[in-house]
Length: 134
Image 1 (tube, rainbow, N blue to C red):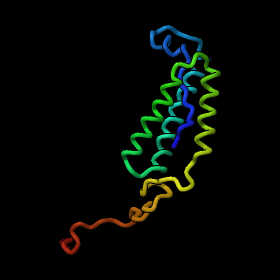
Image 2: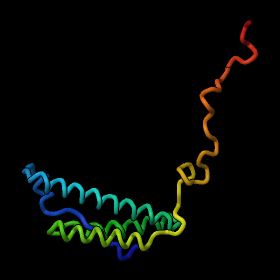
Image 3: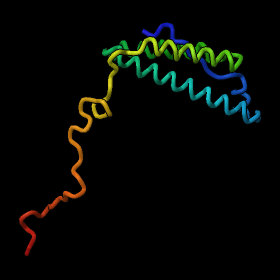
Image 4: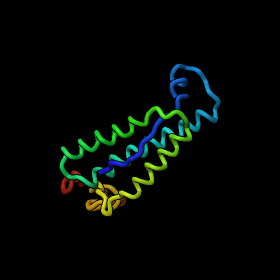
């Protein structure tokens, strides 16, 4: 399904951040923003995969393929190259969007959304109806 998904990941400065050495603030903020984009791309690709397949065995197999594509590009040497990979992955994901994506029934747009809305606060519950003890 998602054979051409181009994942990406971190620049080499991430390893330096893990060791405790500090980098300049702008570089670390750019790296954090990039990691967030990568995580969102990965999550959205998994969620979109759920719309394309019904059988769990197929879904899990495709999850492994998507994960391997992201892990293949994990050690990209420059942040610019990694950013290009993320942009290509986002473009590919937008091209492969499902025309009728799966929506959880009780979420907004789902088939059970607001089916049984809560009672207004003006209506109170009387548990001792008929036994008020006038």
